[in-house]
Image 1: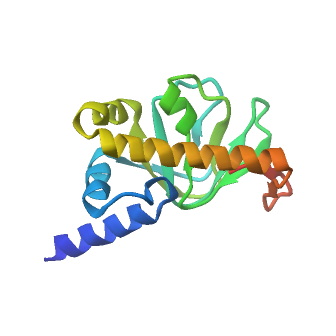
Image 2: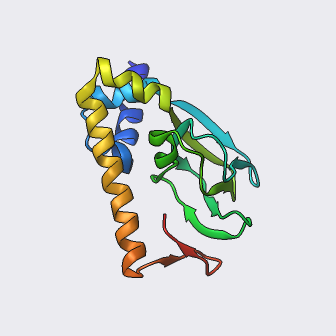
Length: 159
């Protein structure tokens, strides 16, 4: 019984994450099984610009800074937000870096896992892909409109 309660709680958490909000209970459980948990200490570098795009992540706890090539803070990632989607989906190198501001936990979904969905669960793949495109389009619209939020440090944030 405890396992079912724990499983139910995790599924509810996954379904509240913006990247997975459109998933059914069964789909959320499947995606959760594909994810690995990553923990970052304060000041840990998650990725640097130019790193290989092998996964995307969803921040569960903590806070990350988004860094440009000069390691200047250009944004932040807060719990519930996904990051690294473009490099993961395209296989291109990362164009920004991410660094933990405080102890942080994320769910990581690899490019290889995503590609595995195409043959076995194409509808699930399409749901995740469509939601990812919506999130990226939203970021572009905000940036284009000049409605860029500022971080606590007064830096612009597109995330």
